[in-house]
Image (tube, rainbow, N blue to C red; front, side):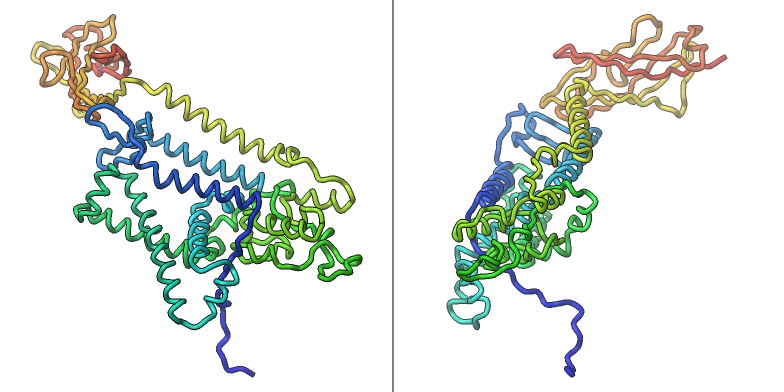
Length: 470
């Protein structure tokens, strides 16, 4: 009996996916190129917003509490737009998972995209699967040290570029790049780049599938989003079994037990063993199996995108259920409807935003002041958001039909000149003449008008005027 201590966890077996060609691999290359291009290049896109405003198309301006996305500018009080986008992202993830399993994980998840990129670099430096396996198992020598140094250097360069691209979203990219290189950037920028460099290197180069299996919660949640109509990757065992090799294949299935599907899998699983939590639905096993079926003269589709319902139909000799019937079902229609409703609501809210954005807060302590002549005065703190990149005039007035008078603190004229791209604060007084109905009444509805002095756009804000009440 062995005296070795019992291991609670099996040691990790490194996975070296083999290169494969096919439709799904090509799709993954395209998605990887597009998503990485968007991530790395977006901070460098310029967008002219006028004087005194940033000309970066996408910018999270933490210092001034603004979010710029091309022609859209989001202020802090409009955070509901960001919340709405997050809700849409969640509903979209539910929709895709319900319709086609973990396609997000297999094609567009950042962990998958960067892992694909790191494996691509590894393959360039060390060779395909068999060569990488030999290098992994051989003792350290000049060849192994040289290849590992080259690989790690390229990985670090990618990781640094990844961390650097992230901080460019929070400051003017060209300026920040110069500051980073010259050593004049804020320590927070360097620490952020360092942390993201290390996490990208470890997650994409070292941990890889371990992040998907152990760190990511989605494999454990996805089961609630899937049903018998969900399209996912499956093995047609009624066509493939019993497995075997050789010339006499009359009593054997189509599967030749070549392990091509296992060798290309980035998660290191055998899809022939059935659905597994680790499967990210990337389709590479389909490409590998189809290639082998072509070589042995068998029909493609031994491994394919299938729904659980398809199995019973095909075992009975029927044709595969049309994909559209799997997609158009109550669950996916519900997710699509909710996703569309949130998107429409955000779009409407974006276009109906007032051109003149005003907040009015009555001063409650005291609620009113009695002047020497018996007039009643109320005080209001008014905020006017100037979204323009230069000083902008705004004129104040009261609605017609009352005898109250409006005054601006510190100004003889009823105009506020707001600084560029900021919320200007103005204290406003409203006075009811002595003996007037507003002075005698406890509460009187009051409408304050603010007019854009350049464009003529106007907005009204309803508030309350407090009188003596006797």
